[in-house]
Length: 155
Image (cartoon, rainbow, N blue to C red):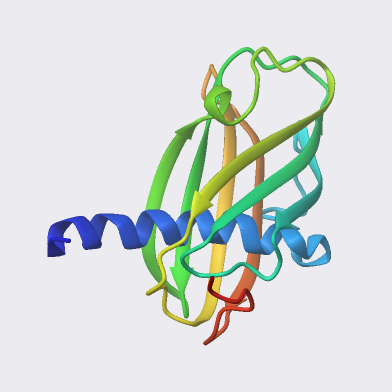
């Protein structure tokens, strides 16, 4: 694998890992601004398997609720490693869930194979969700830790 490909894959996989791991511990998920009444309320985040194994597929699901229908939108993701910004990404919301999203409960799900060389340590993830008019629907942050060893035995 070429160095350029590795430089692209590492941040992408770290972002996806960040989305997965923090959601497992919903009590560690915080809104970016506690004074804002966001239109989308995040209820829980589930990660499977947990803990996430480097080099193995992982699935994360963010359960949320909305007071208004969403016909299109995007998610902006920022990842930090030990406080240093390492990656940003924009994803089409309708690729991660079915649009239109009706008023009420919905789930944003994503599966990703995380690289086996993901460095251990403390990560932070910030996810902002926007509607088609670019109005911010929610903003959450959470911290997570990637350990030194995989908890899933290799086959």
